[in-house]
Amino acid sequence: MQDHKYEHIAGKVKAYINEIPRNVTVVAAAKKRDRGEIRAAIDAGIRIIGENYVQETEKVYPGLKDVAKWHLIGALQKNKVKKAVMMFDMIETVDSVELAGEIDKRCGGAGKIMPVLLEINTGLEGNKSGIIPEDVKDTAKTISAMKNIRIEGLMTMGPLADDPELSRPYFRIAQELFLELKGADIPGVEMKYLSMGMTASYRVAIAEGANLVRIGTGIFGER
Image 1 (spheres, rainbow, N blue to C red):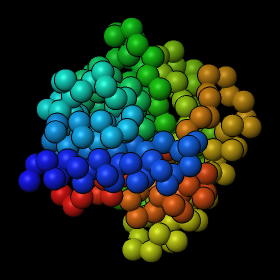
Image 2: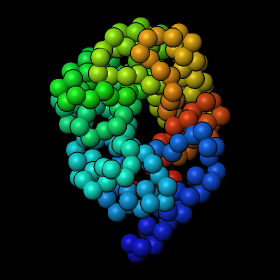
Image 3: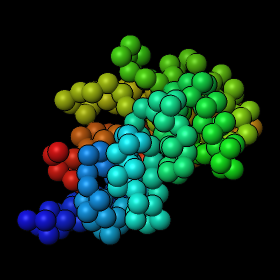
Image 4: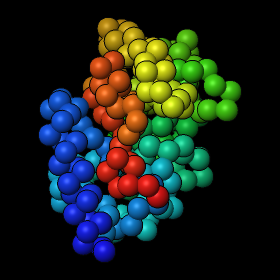
């Protein structure tokens, strides 16, 4: 059964890699997955593992830390930043100047510069984290002055919807902000990555400019 499960994961990864344009990278969203499942995805060609929680990452990270890049794709609490900066190669969910400041401080102590994405609340949802679109430019300017953190793009979730097409307007907002920041030439800000789209919506996200897509269920199956 285990071998069949791993073969299924490998087959899914290869199908995504064959389908998705080469300028787009799949982040395998590995929430609640075990080390064997993650290893199967990496062996099949995945280069970035996305994790939602610091404590879950601690269980699977040993032995795999050098064979893939690790991105934090879930909300980060300030009390977990010290551990997060030691494990992750990128934090995709910076949603405030305060969080960025804590990352900057902890990275300073560790002698590390952390690439981050600014998380945008494109749907203006009260229950969601993220910077509201009108504040993105000012937030980027403030964070850009920090020495141990480097903004490399934007990330958005967008409101959850059964129909992927309903996500398109929110992805478009993120792309417009991405292009605006790219054109603003803020010192220390390099707009390289637009992370948006998941298993159900990655095709729409790619059409709207995503070059990082976060796919979990499509690779690993239902939890």
